[in-house]
Amino acid sequence: MGRAKLNPPYLLIFWLLLLAYQPAFATAIINVEWDKKFGGNNWDHAHAILQTKDGGFAVAGTTFSKGAGSTDIWIIRLDTNGNWLWEKTFGGSNGDSAYSMVQTTDGGFVVAGTTRSDLGYDNYWILKLNSNCLISVLVP
Image (tube, rainbow, N blue to C red):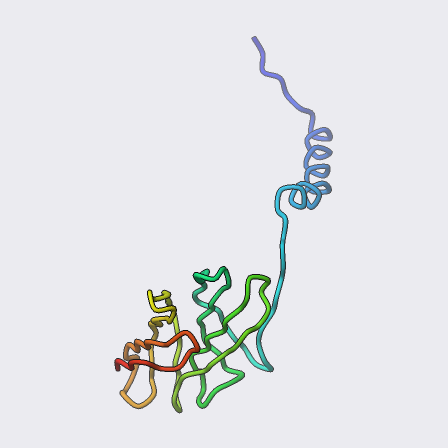
């Protein structure tokens, strides 16, 4: 038994049709509920996101657009529709970044990151924040 072969023009047509209809397939499969962008006049990176107990979201990352130093930890709190509720930056004169975040049982957050401010080069930085993003405990 011989193997069925597609002639090169038919293969090319298949791939062109697949590429042409790919956005339609993606739209049918993925339903984007909302799309928000946050940032300033310089680079800003989100490194961690979590859904909060009230259905909203908290985002932790790094900002070069806001804050006190070259980069700072940037926490943003969003509602269920992705609308901005509040934001807070933490940092000193050198580079500071957040990489991980969890919500605590009291509704606050624990944020883990690094700091180059005040303590030397690339030290870990753990922040315990209350639900309004005020520092409860600071662990250098």
